[in-house]
Image (cartoon, rainbow, N blue to C red):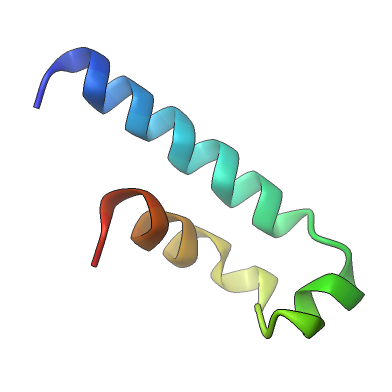
Length: 49
């Protein structure tokens, strides 16, 4: 994996985790997302299972 690809994925991971942590509570509940799991969910979304 190239440096640019790794950097891009890391940026996507950080952005996704931040967005998940900052979801309004009602939206998080509607989507059945526990905001404490933002890092795990973001990692799976960006890097795969």
